[in-house]
Length: 173
Image 1: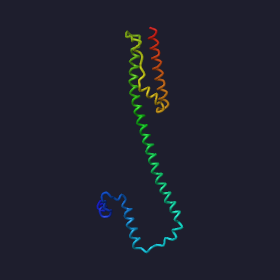
Image 2: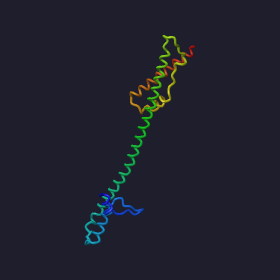
Image 3: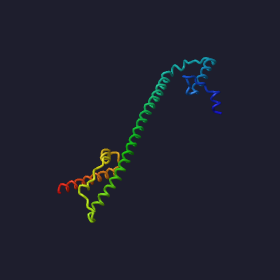
Image 4: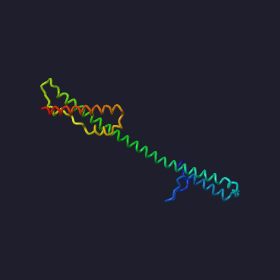
């Protein structure tokens, strides 16, 4: 039904010209016929309002330009926020995976360092190198909540203390 109405009432688009807003077209047609067939109107009193009408048109044009500029600024702001969120998610996922692997390595070292049994571990095998993902997280510390930042500090400090201890024990031997 609506398509039938469009075919009857809306103007036909002629390539490369097409009318995007048909209501403006029909308004122009109505105004054209009114101007052609209606008695001329005395526009003399409008001359006093000419400055005010010009100022109103200028304000409307400024408003349209402002909306266009702010749309671009808002789009750029939202795009940057989405990019930052993607970076955060990638950093969080890489760090989570690395921390799981680090925990498995720490459990392995803790079990091997249990000197009550027969298995003994060489002191050089007890060191755990700091993963690059933790260094990357440390470099981007401002992207993490406060508690996570403190935990990253504790992890780095613990790894550093372990490696310093292992290095000092190697030197003693």
